[in-house]
Length: 146
Image 1 (cartoon, helix red, strand yellow):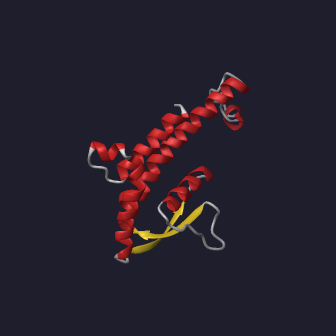
Image 2 (tube, one colour):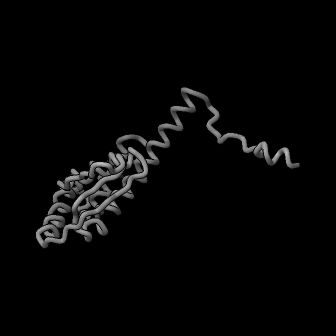
């Protein structure tokens, strides 16, 4: 996948979660953020924000999630003593369930695939052509018991 293709996929995902109903709205992915922000502000005005704790599996996922929160004007934080991969945020549950978490999971999957492809290609081209898994052998204890 080329970088421009990745960017297009990311835009389409955002348009999907913005609730684009018509072909024209889907094409106008640039307005997706504003539509999502409007829905979020309506929920926030109802006073339904809840404190959430998200534990990210790695730093790439955390960076993506923090970027997504900031894109929607949400303020990520963590408490003293929490792990570096923990992200706290006050946000309405409906927004997390319907938009934020599903969008994050989809974006994370696409970015992870893209990063895996680039890493695999670079290792094959620049380090060594054989990127297969290591040979599986019996453990020394199992071998001695035979």
